[in-house]
Length: 376
Image 1: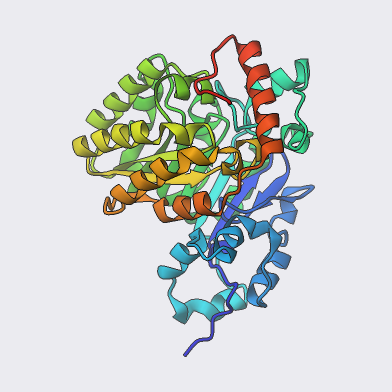
Image 2: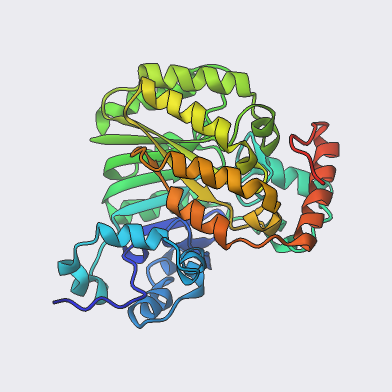
């Protein structure tokens, strides 16, 4: 019987995420990043992390999972291992595995300024911080501005060309569907599956129609639509959203999506968005009733610290946990057990809560928008 190290996670080999605009790499969407200086550094950039996972060491890049596991709860690593073919372990051990999923960033060009995002992923955040930095204390590093690689797209296309083919290509931004380089990057590599994340907030359906026409080229297309809450909470937390228009775009997508097109809603539960949990559950459930190809992945916020569940007052937790338990049988939802574990493991931090209140007030004043929840 193959002996699998207790810290092993195949995601470190199967997935690679590359942002050549900001010069960093990471493996697994929950992992911390590794800085590089050029695209030629990509192959060896994750070797130390792989070594640690093969030798019983909880590599700190994977703290998103270790935090839940060390508290006795489920993690994404556990979910990944359920699908792992142990007969292939020696290939992982000897680093003979080619990435199955490659994710590349087109840059930070975006029409949103989500409260839990930062200049690395949002040009709106970058412009705002350049005009005047926020008075942020525990999360100063999070809102810093990185030096950009001006050859981002050319380097990305060249690197993808070297890979030639992958099982799944994932495109991120910013907002990739508003990036003029989306098509050229997609055309630079052959893949069975195409995936991309979008805020789906367009004034008309041209961008949606463009990706719907791509469906014929792939066995499967997965459009990940980012939405964390509803109504005023959504318009504040994902600043730039017109919620009414967002609902129209969702309905258009549900109606026109072909059979090989999966709509995956993705939600980040911050201490603000999770207060609207009942309503976002109802919204996604209504969408699923219309189109059974819909899935919903729920994550919790790890950074910035002021947005984590450690700034969620204790009185909100019982109702949220009760709602989570009531929908555990809905097979189209993933991440419920992990969110439950994160809520139970979180500890209210009065200092961070004070910093959150300060940030929300400043953000509210700059954007001339009301804070959607009461802050004691």
